[in-house]
Structure formats: structure tokens, C-alpha cells
Image (cartoon, rainbow, N blue to C red; front, side, top):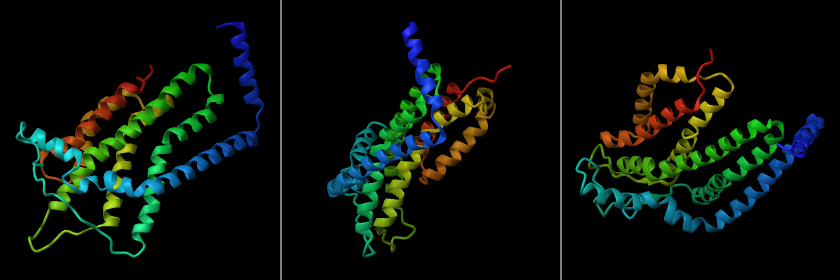
Length: 275
């Protein structure tokens, strides 16, 4: 590195070290204000576009026209053990039983959708806040961590929306303990399961990043994860069974395989035990 570049790094580090606690708090305050301002803009835009988003995106799994059902129906003709999605008549009418539910759902869904869209900007503002406190050698690693965390969050949300929720919802919507009982799915029940499953998978896919951070802090080591791999498999199978209450092994494996791959990825990301 040139002498001029070294001087720039030192001057930036000196400037950061001269900032008081209240100066850092002021920087954080403005970062939160910018995040809140962008969130308000996204909420308004999502609120205006929500009727179209609701019909095409959110209510997609409630109809046989959903692209995942069509895809698995085509695969089912070639692979016999796949679940049967060939029923083109599948449709679930979502009903509303509370006066204000549709309006409140409109607002809350606009907020949660905006929060998902805002996630990269939140990561960017956090990165700007913590970057001055890092050494040059740490900045590259933390930058990759922030980018990887953003990618894994969206990947988890996509898995929850495209795989986990449609399988769970279709099984439960078609399940009947008696032919005399008709399933009527309320709007609140549908949205709670939809948002919960999508966000749960988004958070679960952050586990490798969490393992990496714990490893950097010296709390978690690679040998520990390897030693308890068999125990983790049992726990992950139980977790997969809870997430997908269907009885077929295909749906269980559909959830278990991503969870296990995340565990194996965590093993590769964490540091080996020193000494």
C-alpha cells in the first residue's frame, strides 16, 4: 500500500477515535431516520399496489393456478412418489369474519412487504455505521458477511413462499377429519400462517451467518458442530416435522434437506478450535 493510502486510513481511524459517544449516537439516529423515511415511502407504495399484489402473489397458493402446483404436477407424471398436484379444481375461498380485518390486513401486509424490500437498505445503513470501527483487514470479511446475510434472507423467504407454505397450506386445507365438516379458512388465519412461514424461513437461513459470527467471537468451533452432527440431524428432523405436518416423506425431506445443508454450511464457515 502506498504511503498516501496509509495516511488516509490513519486519518480516518483518528477521526473516528475522536468521536464521542454522543457523536456515534447522532450518526445512528440519522441512520434510523433515513431507514424510517424510506420505510414510509415503501409502505405507501405497497399500500397502493396491494390489491394486485394480494391477488397474484399472496393468494397464489390458494388456487391450483399457482405456478409451484403446476410445476410439481408436471414432475408427478414422471416421478411416481411425488405428491399429487394434478387436481386443477383446487381452490380455497378465504373468508373474512371481522369488520376491520380486511383494512387492517391491507395495512399490516403493506408494512411487512415493505420491511422485506427494505432489508438490503437496512443492511447498508448498518454497514455504514459499523465500518469506521473496523480494521482494514476486517472490512472485507464483514462486507461479505452483510452481503451473504442479505442473500440468505431472501433465499429463505423464497423457499418458505415457493415450497414450505404451499405444501403445508394445501395439505391442511384439504384435510378433513369428517366429510361433514367443511373447511373455511379465515383471512387472519391465512395471513398469520403465510407471513409466519415466510419470515421464519428467512430467519432460519441466517443460521450460517450466526454461526460465523459466534465463531469470530470464539464461542463456537467447528469441532463442536461436527461432534454433535448426529444429534443435530434428529433435532432438524423434529423441526421439519413440526414445520410440515404432512405425513408423506417427500414433504418432510423438502424441509429437512435445506435445514441440514444450512448446518453443513455452518460447519464449513466456523473456525476450527485453536490449540
